[in-house]
Length: 117
Image 1: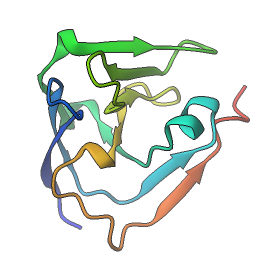
Image 2: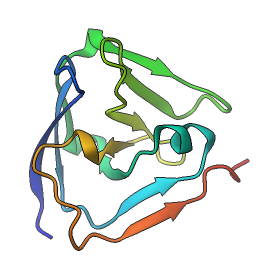
Image 3: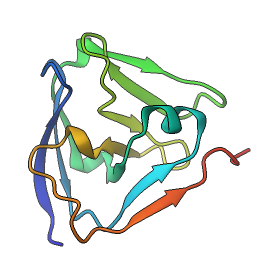
Image 4: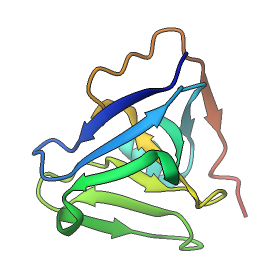
């Protein structure tokens, strides 16, 4: 897949962002928060992520080591993205928040978050 630009947003539209990715794989995670939010994510380097609108509409949640930074819209509660724990210069983007993103032909890798020290 070639690199492509995608626009993303929360449900109410207060948080809007743009990413560029070639989406080599999608991931799921078995940590306690990812299981509950049931997200499928694409990993994007911070240089390929731009928050367009809604910084003030975001709220942040951290737990355990307080390294990963999970962001949610304060208005509608949707999780659009998070800064990753193992690679904090990358974002995990909720693919269901992306406009026109197709999962067809993209492998999904299950990551192990619950067993991380």
